[in-house]
Image (tube, rainbow, N blue to C red; front, side, top):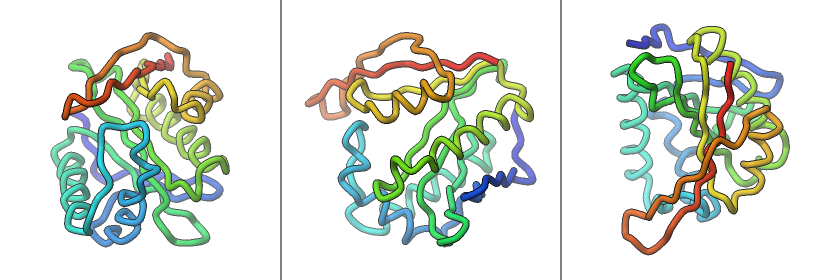
Amino acid sequence: MLRFDPFPVLETDNLILRKMSPDDKDDFFAIRSDEKMHLFTDTRPDQDVSQTEQYLNRMISGVEEHRWIIWTLEHRELHHVIGSIGIWNFNEAQTTAELSYGIAPDFQGKGYMKEALSRVITFAVDELRLDALEAYTERENTPSRKLLERLHFSEAGQVDDVSADGTRVYHMFVYRLER
């Protein structure tokens, strides 16, 4: 079982990747309530801060239960949360896992996510000793696909995923990075 105790705080030039806190609720609500954050996912914007609090509690519990690790991306100069990155869905042997990531629209296209993902990938390979990482991204999410390719991920397949309400099909590209 993977243990994240103490929680690994990672740093880059512009970001501090740290443990989520219930105190992050206002920044995360601003991100999670933005319609643009849900264009390519089977999620809906948070309507009130209580939904964000439930999300934070789930994520924090998952880390405490050693099911995943998720970092809050805090902008070093602004001292605001701008996104998150997680490693989850570990295989039984804990040699591969899946990445999840998101960044507030105002901070997209500025290199922050590439900077953060590069640091998390190094951690996954060097500290967690993972042999491979996978990331799923919607076919129409061109910026995410290009980001993964710049980080040397290769397309490994495609999966169609029907939304929970059955009204939409997501055409997901699977990207993989081998050690």
